[in-house]
Image (cartoon, rainbow, N blue to C red; front, side, top):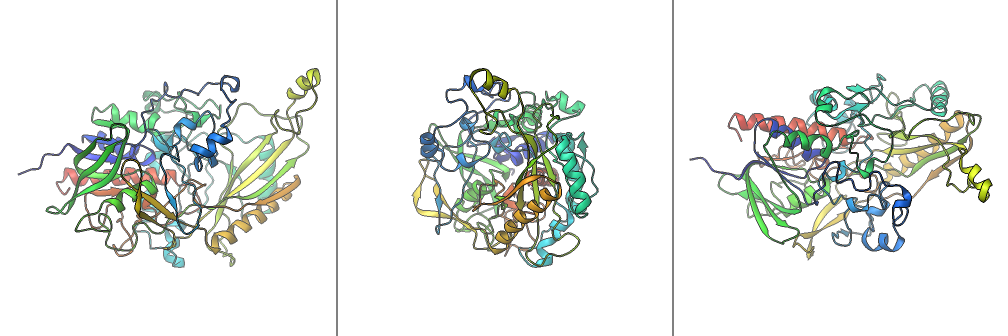
Length: 567
């Protein structure tokens, strides 16, 4: 006798990963419920500050120190946080968490449907074979159960749909993809590229690969997306659909099938476990507005709520069979939390280009792919880092450009300022068991969910890498002939890179990993996790493209299993 479920598939989270799962499952004909703790956000009309000028905003785009300190203790540190975007960020005061062992962690969270896919910086890079082999080769972390060849077709698949602009470079440490036309470097960046690559043959300076349409395909146009307008106000939302988000692309694709039910404003607290079948049977959630408690059943459950929120739910999904979290029989769930290390690089002034300018506000900069520990080992640290940055002219409001009053002031703001060039590093963080999550035994939030406790810090390898970022950035800017080169290295804390990964990682053995090679829980065959929690290592590249590829791959595997009657 068959069991009747509310839905075929429940997807927890509507962001980068959840949107892809919803699209793939709906297009395969399954009835899908997409659950999100965020409030609704309509693509286009919902972007209420998209076209607002500074003088139209009460505080000219700024958030007062008092409001930021009171409501946005952590998210105020995000590059995208401003008066234009604050309504899309979570209120930290109303959604608390605990930092354990005196270790600071800045958890950046979205408050809206679409998650951080609306707010991300859209840098899109593939991981390489080197990255998937690293754990096994140097002994840090468990061996990935997949290699580059397993995921390469899925990188192709998501790149074609999402739309990634970039250039072909033939670098083994940064595989090429299915690209639309890249944005163009400005004249100072072209100069830097020529000088750096001539003086450092192992280093490349390329155009940043980003999820922006430059040559929209028929499929993208059919979804209502158009080419990037180079406004660089992306975090406010883009009604053109010029950049990829779940709101502009995957959720509309899922919705047009008629198979998706989107349910916002719900806090999923547990994945339900059925003792008889040994499978997940659905989820338990609370309506954040009415406080109503609801159970939804499904044949398959995907948890894609973002790394920390996903693991929070899994650890809180306790039963007699799994008292430490659903499917948790080993040491991985809640452990091996990672984020990239940042906060180091260099800045300089570029002289001799004063008669040259550029058009528009390009939404991406340049990228220097990893060059340490690629062909020759660097004995000072393991793994590697890349740089992001670029050149631009000082804005009219900068202190050095703003001169005079009246007529003199008007003339000064019509002249562009000095050229400047900056590089900032993103380095890989090694998996470490002591970087972990736990549930508070005494404190809950207003909806009754135990508070999440976070204990995470960078290790010696990350700090050595950060020091090297400053050193090599200074080398490159000096080699380019720039003036007043100033290195910087700041005290850095996990979370602020917004690339949190691990805590429910993929692997071969349920004793030290939570998921198999298809992002399927070792113990619970109809439970899948495809967001950053699944990552066994971070590499140094921005991870969102890998989340997308893993999500599409896992969804197709699950759909095939469901069609075959195995799930």
